[in-house]
Image 1: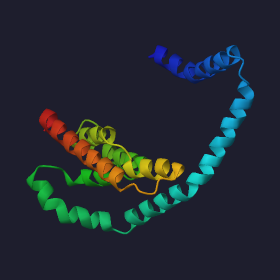
Image 2: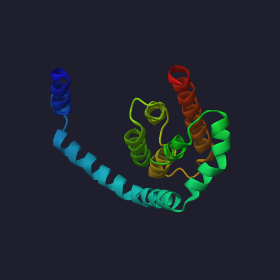
Image 3: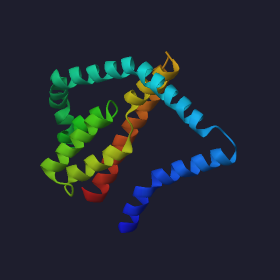
Image 4: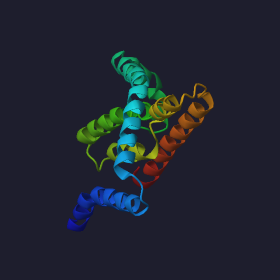
Length: 176
């Protein structure tokens, strides 16, 4: 465990040192390139702000409107029939939208049910089995100016659904 801690402490400074050494060896203006990269990073962050703000407002409205609770009540009979706990639905719905929100839901589930419970194991597996599709599309497509993202959204959400179904299937098979 101490070796892992040591590696984690020196990994980033070592990487920076290696990049600077290679740049100096190749006689590149490393400081000027660093400053140029910083300028590009700041301009990229500024161009992404409207996209991020729109996404965060949408998430906030969805969570506080009560639509999520209504949706869970609506599909609870189906979930009960296929032996899927309804407590996992908020995680399945928030994961494609926001990684931070999904992590908060996962933390709440782990605190409520425990990490070794069926729901805890399922939440942990679901957390790692899909991506934040809407965030990725909003940020990355917005940063390069892609306007038509319908097909990418469909494929991304389909892979999220497959990841969630696979997580439920595997955890049910192993621990159900």
